[in-house]
Structures are given as structure tokens and as C-alpha cells.
Image (cartoon, rainbow, N blue to C red):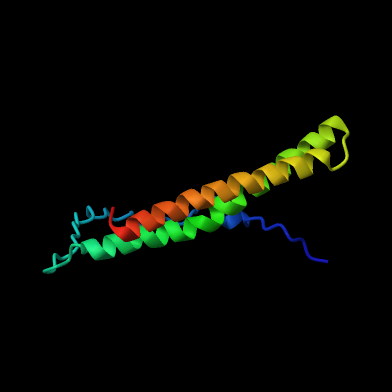
Length: 118
């Protein structure tokens, strides 16, 4: 059976290999990158208006689902704390649906105002 631990022989006791000196590295160059300016590179007002409209349209789903989920979670927590059956979960989920619907109507009205140019 062989021993897995390496021990230096008595001949190698005072001899350790010398490592070469570490070379000095030069300082990294300072680079400044700038995006090239193309003629007409500024976004057009139509593009900006469409981008705002798309972001509002995407927020409709979150504004509808967010209050419903929060109401359901808060109701579930209250039911657990108070020992009630699904009473608070149902009440707060329905209130969340109403709040989500009201928020969705606000977002759609804002989207319509943007489309009309007001």
C-alpha cells in the first residue's frame, strides 16, 4: 500500500525552486467610447408618442391583475389569522377586482387621451 502524502527527500530539504520575477504591467489605456451621432438620430415625436402608448397598453394587464392578487393574498392571510373560512379571501378578492377594473378604466382613458392628442 502506498502513502498518499509526499515528503521531500533529505537531499531536497534546502533547495526550493526560484520563481522568475513578476513583470510590471503597463497601465491600461483610457478609452472613451461615444455613440456616433447620425443625422436624424433623435427619436421622432410620433415614435415617442407610440412608445408611451405601447407602455400604457402593456400596463393594463398589471393594473388589472395586481389588485386582484394582492386582495386574494391579504384575504388568505386574514382568514388564517382570524380562523375564518374563505370569507375574507372572497371579500378582498372581489374588492381587488373592482379596484383593478377602476385602474384599468383610468389607463384606457389615458391611452385614449394620448391617441386624441390632448
